[in-house]
Image 1 (cartoon, helix red, strand yellow):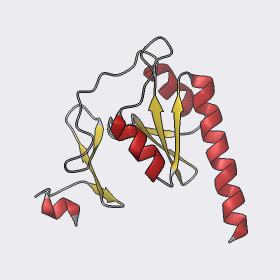
Image 2 (spheres, helix red, strand yellow; image 1 turned 135 degrees about the vertical axis):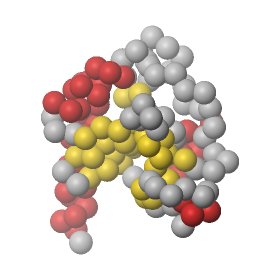
Image 3 (cartoon, rainbow, N blue to C red; image 1 turned 90 degrees about the vertical axis):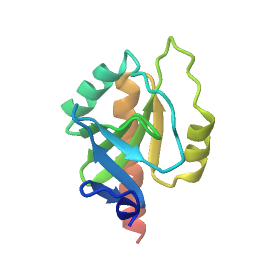
Length: 132
């Protein structure tokens, strides 16, 4: 529905969020009127991506509203990467997003935290599934 409103012919729509693939292979979540910002990749992001791929994650660099969209064993996880030596602050839009979302979402600064986030999300999802 959102894709048609934006006049897009191809892409993937998840929960009203449109994924658009760019020429450089990155995927950007487009949310009209929200999360507009210039994006600079943190220096530690490639190492985090590599660590996640080593444990079987499929990693998409999406930039907005967070840096990474992770698929792990049919579970979707959102990760914002912060540089431990950088300013380490979430944008106002990201703070609102993290308060509002019910999806598994984390802020990480290194590969160890990223792997721990995936394990935690998987355990919590498994526990919730058993309650249904």
